[in-house]
Image (tube, rainbow, N blue to C red; front, top):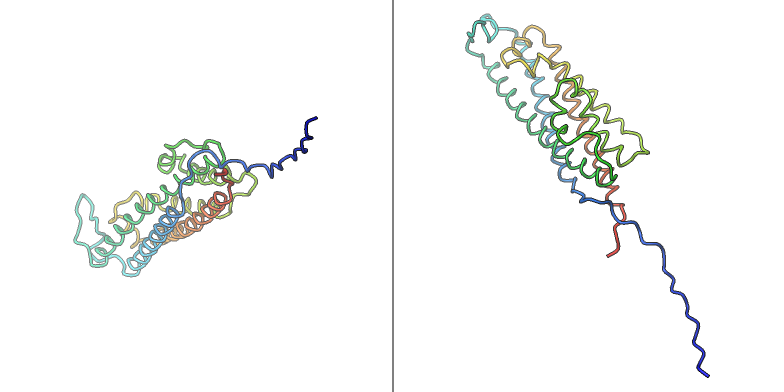
Length: 238
């Protein structure tokens, strides 16, 4: 007679293994966000300086020799104040380019992460990351749509942060106020406008300054939310 085998105690499998991390490589975003916020701060200072020079030009008044552009391709020698405005304007343009590059690099990263975290394709294809800002009519809603998609694809149950709408409203105000004033006209024409009617220039300046400051807050808000989600996302066991 064989010895009785002891009963086999089932091994407790323990809690179920956590689901794996989202498919796709997640890209670091903290550094890109810091660069974008710093660039936006630089643009804020640059446009505030431009507004100060617009006020200085308005207070100085047009010289007796008339505006810098005399017509028929004739330009008089600029005054010292006008010369300094050319420097401020060029510095502002350079700051705007730096800001645009840094912001797009950040947006590209958070878009990629949103796709990896949600498993869904972005609402707008990759070329719109650049074309959305320059194609007429489309530039009135595509950039906001791309930013909103970053948030809603990862957090479908959360409301869009109000700072996104504030940023876009101020950006459109600056864009509309700047058409034919700063973006399209040469610097000498802007100087002439400052002499004769500075208020529209100041409205555009202040709207863009506020938009840049709000964009920095928006960048920080969306980055913090996405980074927290990535930090809390379960990882597969080793």
